[in-house]
Amino acid sequence: MNHNEILALEHKTWDALCISGSTLIPLLSDDCIMVFPGGMKLSKESHPTLSSILASEEFVPWSSYTILESETRTLDGSAQSALICYKVSARRVSDRDSQSFDALCSSVWRKIGPEQWEMVFHQQTPLPHVSNCIFCTFVGYPSAEIQLRDDSMKETSKASGIDKDYSYVWAISSGVGPILGGVFTQTIGWRWCFYINLPFDGISLIILFFFLHLEPVTTAVSTLRSFDWIGSVLVVGGTVCFLYGLESGSGNEHSWDSAFTLGLLIGGILILLIWGYYEWAIAKCPVIPLRLLISRSTVPCLLTAFFHSFTFISFSYFNPLYFQTVLGVSPIQSGLYLFALVLPLSAMTLGSGLFVQRTGKYRPVIWIGCPLMTVGTGLFIDFGPRLVLWKIVAYQLIAGIGAGPLFQAPMIAFQNALKPENVAAGNAAFAFLKNLATSLSLVIGGVVAQSGTGEFRLVDSNAETEKDGGGTVDHTAFVAGLSHMWIFYTALCGVMTIASLTIQKRRLGDEHGDEEIVPDVN
Image (cartoon, rainbow, N blue to C red; front, top):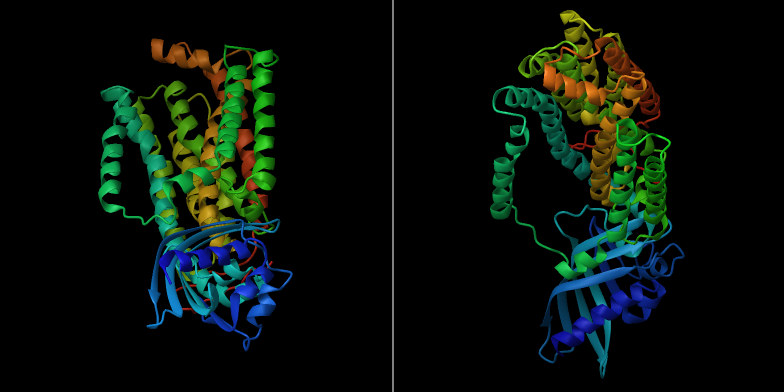
């Protein structure tokens, strides 16, 4: 017996699993026992039996696997039995879903003849970052998922606390950023809005390098090979083309009916459609696993988060633009006006997070936030060419109270609607969708505002403001354009509110186990 001989047996086992469950059965002894996380033990005496699960029509073969860091030991002096321990990273892609499996596995092999071995025992231990729902991943038998989902949902609930802290930071920084930007612009120059990021980025890289210790489960070459390069190029290329087409048509560079603008817009949309089809039907390791994330439970959460990010970024961009260009205030004073938005927003983000954490109920938070944000956005339509301080404070106060709870509640609802093994991919897709929404919002919002100004061009007004201190700007046309734009954003908030009403009822599990968990067995 040598290490390579036993390792070859494990490769033969996984090769069989890449074909079918029945292919593995001849490699197993009659008394083979397999132990999985969550107390699941399979053998010929178990119910269901090991062979019945492997031979089931519901078994889904693996698509790929990698064995790492294997180690073997003999269990007797005559080398008639051997133990092997190794790490495995595998992936299964099917029409139903896509699953990843990373675990520490151990197997016992018994020699039954010259160069003939049979597996008598197998056990797997999920790696720390992997959810507890592993049995269904390994054997492809969906009914077993129900038995293990309870613990997995509790782990998901704990993990959502990390995302909740991230939402706090994102919400506060999104409001404070424009204030600091105004200070830098008025005192040391607008370029410092970008320079200030460099030292903090450097410190972050140093901290990550010395304190973030991740144990790789695959080699660098395997990771690069499995990365969805085609999907990444398609989504970036399509988004850039579409946004540049909007920017081109709304500016002085090209007209809307020019071949340049139409080519970018139509080409960008076609590329994004191709990307969607590729991610759905072709990609083995998609950037966004649409097949896993699109369901009746998740779509309302995604729509709510998308329209919230799409609208909220406009508060931080177009309101300071209105304050400085139309009202003629300084950048610092414009930042101070934004406190009416930032303070209630931060307080509601924190308060709603604590409410969800203690009660496990997120739908009331969403249902309160969406209508208030819609009303606050609609009130911005009433901003006029003259300074009315109470309107600036009251309107932003209502918008901030409504927008604050929506930073994290839709994300928690989205995570709770996912299977535990899909939460990591879901979080990445959720963050990508929010970033995409903010990128689209400013360009599309500017285009809509421009369409409401008539012959007056916002680009020209910005240049005149910088040159003449705001004295030559057509305030009436500028306000008309912004009002037109706020009508557009209010309509989107209305769609967001309608979508939020269809979010399904699921209560989070907590670490004490005193909350009811409604499993998603679909």
